[in-house]
Length: 118
Image (cartoon, rainbow, N blue to C red; front, side, top):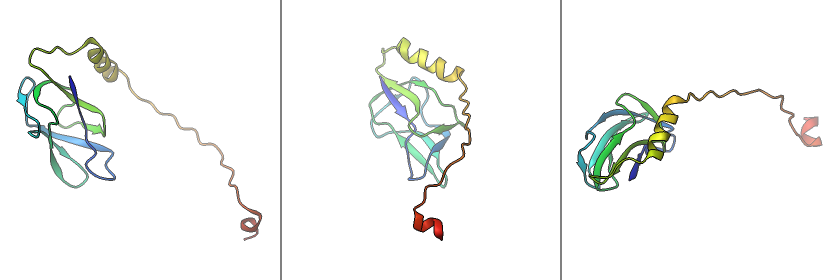
């Protein structure tokens, strides 16, 4: 089973918007064949498959903004089943909300004696 990840298509790209999938779950894809269209900050780019196989599961829907390097789909053999570990990971990811709390700490600026006199 191969992971399809959101590629980093530009130096400053942190997220990509999935414009549309060019293949459906169950479709056969060949290496180099376009899978989906991703919109970056400036342009829409076709993302190609890096593997031959069947598009087993699409995790990211059209219109979703996905962070770079996150898994957006799986490609596998025709009869290959998605493992329980992958399914548990999908459920865990979808069920958790990430809340980030940042505390602002007073920062002590270190300066040399010469810089302090300026």
